[in-house]
Length: 311
Image: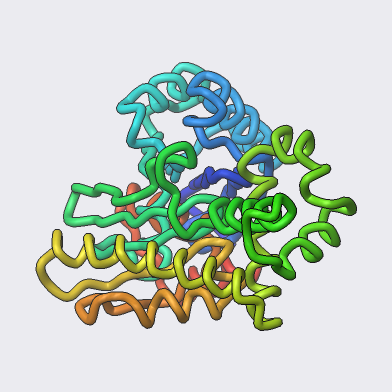
């Protein structure tokens, strides 16, 4: 099929970086995955070099030298002003084609198209993004050192903390201790070198133990689950107060996708003014929607189907 446009999008989170090269018909010409690249954690220059490496591999794999639009959805981008764009434009071909936003905007677009709405992200980290016209802002998501409530990292951290407290005799005995040991191959309190080496993404992998222990009736795990779900819903109430009217709220992120019972619990706690929509597309699809928007095109059902079938 002939095409008039070559477009690219990349999505950056705490656990992975993903990029696609595609046509306006939704045909994917190249797809590259790499490690996470949150610039708050990796540093701005190191993160930018990581994105350049991913995108260079993408363009080489696709065999293209020129594109019509490049859209990036980058976690924590809003903290760096134009710094990230400046670094990428200095290293990439056709820098005028580049547009970068925080990662929540693409998640809104993946389900709503390029229009107003909000998105709650729950993966390694968590936050809510609100888009109104050309303006967007985030609530929560102040980084794991300050506030990443209800996220995979927080669930994993609270599970590990509960097990260590039980081991010390400071906390209630919990099935989490056994589940954590099964996952890492040794008692969690003997695993701290690996935990600190793996940092936030590795700790987030232990979130699954909370959901497993909860299904087994573990009281400690039930408490962690409930506390984290309430924390996420609290951000949704803050969004509702700021918007002051009914709004669409897309739920997205790896934790919601892997543990639908958690998404359902958060939804049940959200304000009535939030029309909650479960995302059924990968984050990078929203980036593709935004790249199409940058060349004056929208994504119809045929584009959506073609893209998702090839992804």
